Structures are given as C-alpha cells and as structure tokens.
Length: 299
Image: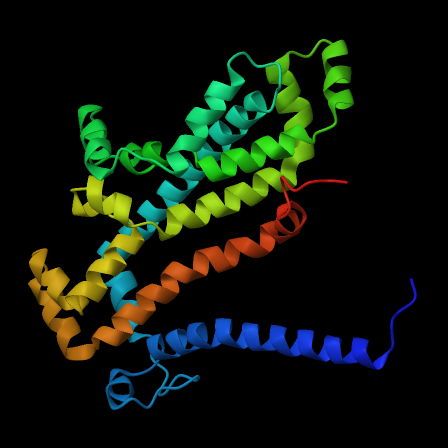
C-alpha cells in the first residue's frame, strides 16, 4: 500500500494525533489528580496544595480504610462477587437467547423478538419490579442485584445480529457429525465467537461494578453492600467517620476525624474502585478490539 505523503494528508495526521493526545489528557488528568489527593497528607489537602503529584506522600487513607475498617474490604469483595456471578449469568443467558432467536425458522420468532425489544422503550417501573423481587424472596441476596438485569435487550439484539452472520456451513457440518443444537453452540459456535462474548462480558462487568442503584433498592443488610454503594454513602455523608459512628464504631470514627480529611477518604475509595477495571481491561483488550464491531453489517 502506497502511503499518502501530500500536504493535506500530513495536516490531517497532525490534527488526528493532536486530538487523540488531547482526549488522553482529558481522560487521565482527573484520575491522576484523584490518585494524588488520596496519597497526600491531610494538611496539604486542606490547604489545597495538591496538584498532579502527591504532596507529602502518605498512605494513611489507604491504611485506615483497608486495615482499620472492615466495611470497605468487605464491600470490595461483595462487588467482586456480584460482578463475577452477574456477568457469568448475563453472558450465558444472553448468548443462549441470541443464538436461538437468530434462527429464522424459530416458531413465533417475531413475537419473541417483539417481547425482547419492548423493554427498551416501555418498562413496568421500579415499584412493580420491587414487588416482584420481594415476592420471589430475593431481597437482601445477590440474586436481587443480578436476576432483574439478567439480559440487556441492547446486547441481546447485537448478539442476534452477530449470530446471523455466523457461517451456516460450519453449523451444518457439525450437525452432520452428530452434534445437536446445544453441542453445536457450545463446541463450535462459542469458541469461534470469543471476541463477541468477551466484548459483551466486558460491558456487563463494567455495568455491575459501577452499579449502586439496584443494590440501594434491594439490599438492607449493610454487610452486603457493594463498594459503589459504600462510596455513595461516604460522598453523601461527607466523611466515613459519620458513617462509622452510625454503625456503632465510634472509636475508629473519632480517630479518623482527627487524622483524615473527607477528601482523602473519598478519593482513596475512588482509586480502589477504579483499579480492578483498569487491571482487567489489558487482558481482554485483544478480544475487545476484535469484537467492538460485533453485529455490524458485513459486505
């Protein structure tokens, strides 16, 4: 391929690269600033002397919320459990439903597609959903924050479109070898759809990890709270000390009030909530890059 070296092409390259650098800076600078505040001394935070680099490096906020307080480590594990279980269920049910609905010879397929699309525009609302979850006995359990969001209509439609473009000849060859529909899906189709499955899995995982509203509705036991809900409580109450005092941990609350600032606790918790997604993404990036265009038209 011959590279275009004309003046217009070079100007376009400069503009594109400059734009990308600007986007990267806009994305990274707030994260760097948050991390710097979480690693700075409380006095410097109060005086507003923290910029993009920690001032008087201190791990006091992390030491307090990770080792002297059991709420955040426990909520972190709750978030990990909810994300793993919820994402696994999402991927399994979305993939299975999409594979079935992608078959044109499916009986009553238009009706099923209509039922799947309607929730994108019309829902029963929060109160009916709350009453349903309560009547099924799922309140204050992990199922209350995973089952109601089992299948996303958007990702279901995307996966249906992806499976429609899957080579029919491969499936027919598998059936000639004696595979049933389920065996064909598990042993033939899914191994060749790793990029698509990893992509929707990533988006499902990010949704579960960042979600707090569903947990706020259905979880009543403080020990079952995910990290994002704890973070919300910290931000609303302005300091973890007030929260600890309300939970009966007055001694630790008093110690935190005298040694930490609300900002250091908030930002340290923010960093802890950001790190897992940043750590996971590089391992699935190659699948994400290949699968980001799943469901697109192929010519």
